[in-house]
Image (cartoon, rainbow, N blue to C red):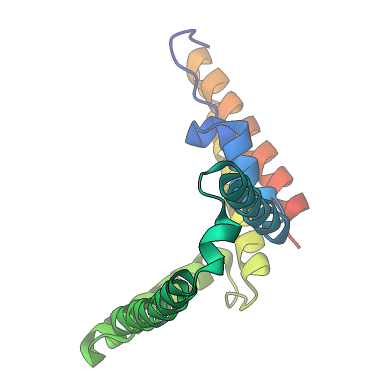
Length: 183
């Protein structure tokens, strides 16, 4: 095996993406409900601190009638503007998703091509369940990797055999790990 190149695959998402452990945990594994509660609480605490520290005190500002009218009209404006933005963005997303009928046919044909290719690859109709579909793909990848390793065993090139062994061990190890984590 050469020291210049490492042909094994990265074993963790952090190695593959190059992102920090905290960022990956926050985006992939953290409880999103809990994260939203923490962020909302932080904004609330920051608002309370700002109201308590800034001069003139907020209670004096709110006692004047003009301030109440201004805040009410501002809140109504924000609600209307926010609702308009949400509806507009929703329509934009849906229009991109639906698109012209020809594009829909192309997407459906491409999807069916992937299903047909997968059926040829695994030797049976591709499963509808996403985790089972991925499990089948991973299983056939591990089988083909093992077949590659066995076909190279008879090769005279020692360096090639070592590199293929290292690669095959990495692929089959990752396949086993992913299979264990699938529902």
